[in-house]
Length: 172
Image (cartoon, rainbow, N blue to C red):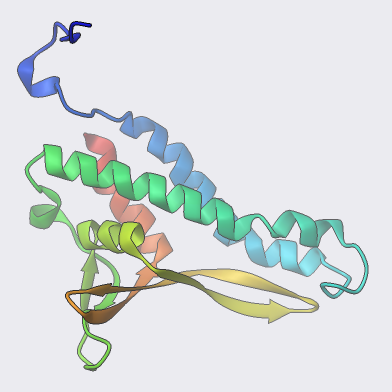
């Protein structure tokens, strides 16, 4: 079977994700974090002590956050690679990176590296607080993994990440 070669400019042959759609995903991501406390306030039964429909609704938060973050991270990396790693020139931090957990020193977590850490995280933990009978998520995520036999930890400020993402990625 012959290979289909689209009739377009040669520089537009790679992946060109619709970055306009990422605004909707950013909105969903922020909405989850910003509403998590309100959902927790509505819970009246302790988990496991009777059915609480709000608790059931809130159970999907972590999975949806993971889905959205992975989608955003992959899209941003595709755009940055296609554009010659432009994020390094204009990006700012959206968290903190501890490259080696055996050492105390930390560095700013810039958006490209944040995307790398989201994609390669071996553990994802959420910053949680409790109100009444239910826990809720703050817009901070802790990502853990290993690179070159060193364990790393990234602390992602979700609000800064979203602002940086819209500023950088959605213009391409």
